[in-house]
Image (cartoon, rainbow, N blue to C red; front, side, top):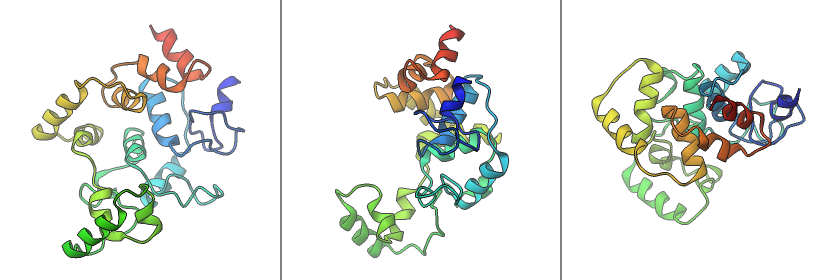
Length: 207
């Protein structure tokens, strides 16, 4: 079947073709969650979903050369929507892939200055763990969505969500994320995944 070209061995959907075994991206949980939101048939491996949630990894360790990549904000939203990630899996509103060290403001400022202008992977590749206090903090605009996944409510986070979801979004990734969080802008899904992806064909048939 054509859709198998975009699915890895754990049933996660990707934006680029796979060999049916290995992932072609580092955002399989996000893309699988978007597919679920769109009503596209999915069958991700629940055990792997729970493993990645608990360990805060994008991939299980058998994914060669990719299992080391830390979890991302996009992936925790996907894992939450798929039902794996719960409040107990975060350190408050932080999804640091390693235990948070005791906060040291002086060291934090020093590390922020060191990492300034560097690629976002610089701080975890160089052990700048104080930055985890801010780099892995769940953005305010995402917290209402997570609360919805968990059956919780906070009026302040809801207000931030309303403001954010009504901002004009031109970036393809932002439009894709807005669809996941609100179910709106389904055209953004087609724009993100492109004309040949089976998920695009699925959402076009929904119109």
